[in-house]
Image: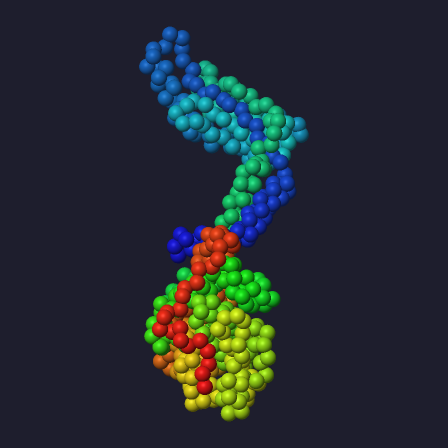
Amino acid sequence: MEAQEYVRILRKSWLLITATALLGILSGGALAAASTPTYTASTRLYVSVRTQEGAASTDLNQGTSFARQAISTYVDVVNSPIVLDRAGRELEPRMTAAELAPLVSASSPANTVLLEVSVTDTSAKRAADIANAVGESFARVVSEDLEKPSVGPSLIAVKTIAPASVPSAPSAPRVPLMLAIGLAVGLVTGVGIAVLRTNLDTRVRTAEQIEAVARRPYLGGIFVDPDAQKRPLIVHADPRSPRSEAFRRLRTSLQFVGLGDAGRSFVVTSSGPGEGKSYVAANLAIALAETGASVALVDADLRRPRVADYLGIEGNAGLTDLLIGRAEIADVLQPWGEQALSVLPSGRIPPNPSEMLGSAAMRATVEHLERNFDYVVIDAPPVLLVADAAVLSAVAGILFVAAAGKVRKADVVAALRALDAVKAVTFGVVGQMLPMRGAGGGSYGKYAYYDGDTPVIEPVPEERRGRRGLTT
């Protein structure tokens, strides 16, 4: 996974990551609030070797070296029962060695003769009392029991140089640290969930993913439109919008791809329902008509027709009537708008759509439209649901629509394999419902200048300008 993909994941999942981070902070704060405060008090002892007055410097050095060696042993002696028992008897109330052992710890800074005794307890005063009592008890044990020769005073002297004082603030819980740990755990959890969710997500999300999965020319992408159901003809309703411009870029791509007569007819289809193929077909037809080209838009989705509803025309009579010989093409082909756009609605839904679309009458109809129009745009049913689109691929090339965030990668692959199996010519792939921001989505900001300018329209080639309408 590339860095750009991680950035896209973070942008897409920022709300999740923020929520887990806040939850981590709250959890850290709650844990800190629920924890019993503890206080740590420390006393510092100085360990030395007794020397006679006027001793040589070598004797002093040897004494210091001996004290340093003894310190490592004394660290363990501090927590011994003999020291803790004596200290416990000095406390009020008295405590046993077993009760004191978990509270007491000892340490010595490297290369020093200092010994630090620390006590952690839920009572600040008791922690200081215990630390001082243990320090005094340790000094007596060393001088009276461990290092006392048979004759004379002890060779080791232990002095308290910094008695323990009552701590003013608890040593635990450390609220800032717990909040920081909670934040870190929350962030890691959020990012982990986001990455895992992305890896487990089998849907295509970006234009790059669509192109990589389809392995076909990527002709263009249409941004997600929340109001597509309310105003499906965006090129007509808002011709200066970024989405309208996206259809014009798609139109330009098709004009370069579809060189020659074979490229004048397009079957617009998708893997499954709800990917916006009819939306793409209708707006592409309008965008093509803007150039001055004559365009025929055919609703060949004889199962769930949408074109007539989108364009606001009567759809009861149409392709079905034409294919069964009940009507002539001039009777059912309806002009639409101010451009040279004609619409052939689906007509009534037949019981055998696949057979009708694969008939010789359908081939003859498409050939007739190709002779009389510069472009023929055919809206077909989804590939994986029925065989209609595969059947239609025999009369025109495929324009495959893939909706980001909706279609699964496996469905895109399966649909294109089904088209390859019937030797369909796939001109390319159109990304639909692309995210407005993030990797593969871009941003509307760079197209803002279209809001005040007239859209650029590519002129129709001279050799095609004669076919402006239907001839019988």
